[in-house]
Picture 1 (cartoon, rainbow, N blue to C red):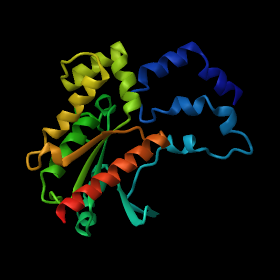
Picture 2 (tube, helix red, strand yellow):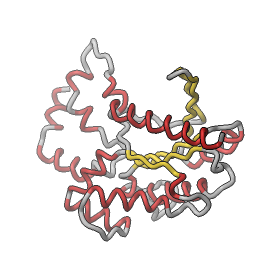
Picture 3 (tube, rainbow, N blue to C red):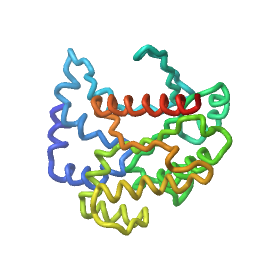
Picture 4 (tube, rainbow, N blue to C red):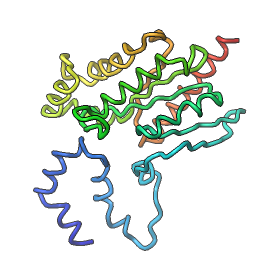
Length: 233
């Protein structure tokens, strides 16, 4: 462990990590490396921060039921990789009240692994366009678009070199501000909806590793679903 810690502290390794951290499949690796003493202790117990930064691919569909504010809720988590997307139709046909579509704001820097020459963001937009314009969901279903990893996105926009990559990959030609860049990303998804008006799609920026932030997002999601159901009644 001492050798690993010493290696991690070398300037060359730090510099190398700074060069690849935004394109890494595991952007929180530095968090774990900085916590090695605690993580490798014999009495180690994972904290909430440890858990929310871990990564595990979703295979199939995983349903979580919970009681909150006088209602039973069921959240179905489905995998986003190509083999998993083929299973979505069967799940939706069983009946849902809302769709939550998560977008990783840093995916414009990462190769898709599915199609040569495309980034993960390219594939995310293609899937979004297909879903939002299909017959799977109607105006009676609440559609929520969550722009996730806002923390990493802010770091990218505020970094001069990374901002240049952002402009190159997305063809953004606005000023180097987080608000303008985020608005651009938001509109790049909303303009792909040809059957539903933008006002019917609820958009929110999120940071899934912050528990307090997710609680705010939960309140926003719950209110959006209830508003649409009351409108239908």
